[in-house]
Image (cartoon, rainbow over all chains, first blue to last red; front, side, top):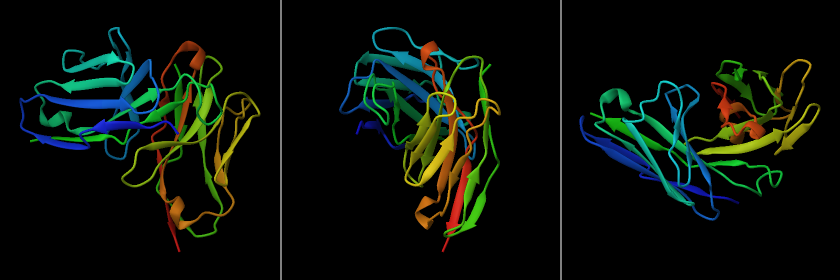
Length: 121
Length: 113
């Protein structure tokens, strides 16, 4: 099946530093990747949609200068949390949309990475 | 706008009990509906899906039927196992509109032996 990896799996950083999180589709090409944020005991909230070779589309309320997204290739998207603060501490999850295959085949199924736990001190 | 509402957890059951996790949705178009599962320490996995009204998705003993008249997609399993303990998320997406998944808040299921 389609596999999506994230790196790092967890990171602790000091307030004011920047952190980069990578999302890779390992065995398929993903023209679209999504970045979500998950707070404890809450649902995943979509932050942005990332299309290869173009600017990301951010959801309302998400600061695009704070959360920089780059989708430079069909298998890699990065999320950079700039000047991180304690309130940015969260679980960040990416997903990649497959143009085919999946549970029912050819249905643009999304495959999720295992997530990255960010703690800002 | 589109939204998903699912029952609050946690749900605590004994092994072999019947499981129902309720999910209702609001959508402007004709969405596809999904159930995802997140096992402890792992990423989200698609459990089952349904793409149109009256479709039944099934996988690993779990079932859910897309009910347009009640805008529901309740998850059921006849006999749960300890290994089913996880967080379950109901979600919808309107692929034709190119939208991402919209998730419910998740329901934690804990099954004891």
